[in-house]
Image (cartoon, rainbow, N blue to C red; front, side, top):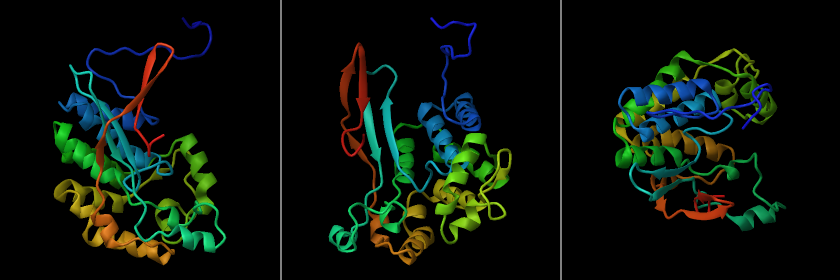
Length: 258
């Protein structure tokens, strides 16, 4: 038991549900989905999508998604791997001929095909209750109206400011600088993308003008990405692996997860 005379954290209890994220706004949105009659899957998608706006240097709709799910009343744990694959045209021999011993982190070659969107849509269809439109609605609203930037997010943003290239600087900097704590960050074009995904599904993201824009931008930066890479992307259900630490069973995705 912790000593209540010192700062610390106590256990949290709830009778109907709870959500833990790294941002209060994302947690609030997830809880609002539960209160509206959604289930944990609906809430998780809502919170995770909003985190892509509140903490864009972490992940988002251009990133990956690893899901572990246990349905109520069952001990079976479902693993859904929504990680991005490398483009088919990426060639290790080409990289080594250029003197590289690893994939250059800040190059287009390090950008995998986004897997999160397909995973969110699949999870919502297979296990959700309210549908993807309800889960994405809060992020669409906040992308247009803006979210306040937290101190830690601002710190990380400033540290990565120099890594932003080309047109990305127009979208992720305010007045040419990383947002300061308390500043409002807006992403109206992401709102447009999320709205199209909620209305038209995965093809709105992995085919058509959005995919064409991503491929064009990546190829201008030296990437080998193609429209076929995006169109063929899909998440995958796998069997989780587990091990014991003392009396606790730890469950995780098999490789390529960590």
